[in-house]
Image (cartoon, rainbow, N blue to C red):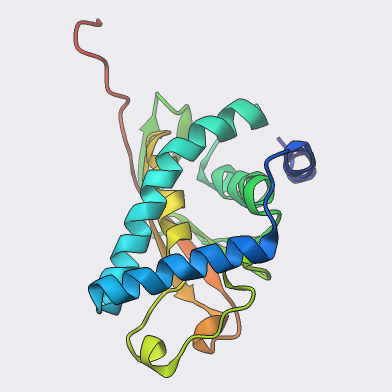
Length: 206
């Protein structure tokens, strides 16, 4: 599917979604969650971990809804995975379209295949999502303590990506590499392919 088609699918999914909530309410609710975690753990590294874990659990469930609604079919390679995530996934659920930048393939890449996902790609390849907008952080300003503690305020997004892709047989590392909330020029998430997973066959099935 071409990039323009991906964008059209994402636009249609957002327009068709009926259970939208107010953006400011969404931001405030997420912010309250992060504050509660900070109070509970008093450790920013642990808060980052908990946000990622929450996102992972969301992603493992969100992928079913995404597949059912988008009808995008299987991606041909990891590059197309990045395009679908940016232009269809983020648009459908958050009404934003990050810019996706694909990395060069690593030197002497290990080529992995997944018969379950129908994908061929290079283990170690990655893409970066640049978020010009971030609904989670629209009205947020981090205190110095959080900056010094290296809080990744929107780390739930990394967990969502990891959880969703694991459900379609891709083990990835998803990490924030910059965030405007921390004084960076851009907000970027890097998604790196670790390996393809084989689909588990239920006990009793041949």
